[in-house]
Image 1: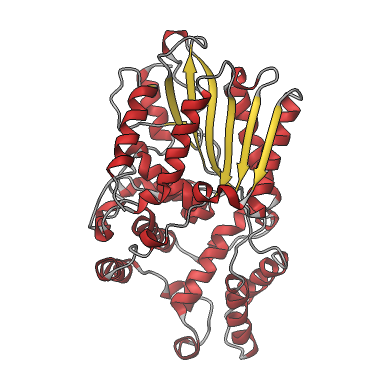
Image 2 (image 1 turned 90 degrees about the vertical axis):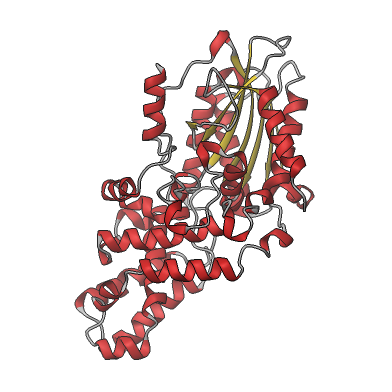
Length: 429
């Protein structure tokens, strides 16, 4: 594939900064993208990849992936919209649309009974398919009696995601040597809770900026008024903004469940309302996990332990004749800040004006859908080849790194390693 086609594939893969209008256009083509972290894994945009120079072949993969599609975690997100709409139904205050939305919300609530946060069938399928493509893309890594070291966080949806991926790999090569684990022992890097840094996410500056941004972009009253036949009842008895948020979250997550084949909730909202709901979510994710100047720009460093571990394990594995793969399964709250810490596709941008974030290409759903993954793929000619190259895939699409290279998307591991270790060493807690 030519360099021109490579650049085009990155654009199609939603990896480079694009103007806000492109987000609107993407939503028109596929409304599900507006779901932010509830987007069901769309699969790679690329079908062809830039060949590795000098005849080098893949020999090791280091991976961190989010669990697959799941049910919502907070019980209120199912029960509260139902209770609000049911109370209005009892009072005779729902429009025909409101009555039908109540029916659909009850279906969603009933399907989720005793399944809060659990992996859905689609989530299991996503990880089988990701593993299959990983194997097919880099068969050299998985040939023979290759070693696979897999770890998961201790959350069941992550464990089941790992097991589905490993089952797929075993189907494709029963000779694999697999070690898999999920232990509190590894949570210091697999799911690190940096309470000190997290405590700095919100301050006067971030709250003020987010409040102003939210007030400017809120667009919900028309949709909520369409559900109720009495505006006085709506005003006095319903927190319309809260109900909007509940219903938009249900609409977003529905794509991850079996019910998506039967119903939708996106018909409640206009295109402008869908876009506005997403904008507000995108700004909040940037404040909490991006390099937002308003809170010091340090939030991506919550994943410093994970990145350092990836580097150390890669250094160890590339010394082996046949290292195989290191697979890790966790959460979007690791994938997103890790992407920003790595500065993949310029996601490390530091900005203090929330209005500029989207236009600079910081688009959340392009990073952390259900099943999101980062793959470091290492290349060499043979075990004696010390000039190791690495390519990083974000959701199976080739990425741009903040490191000079004359063969991008391939980079010399020595250069990549040096850049990130210097960045990590410069950080002061």
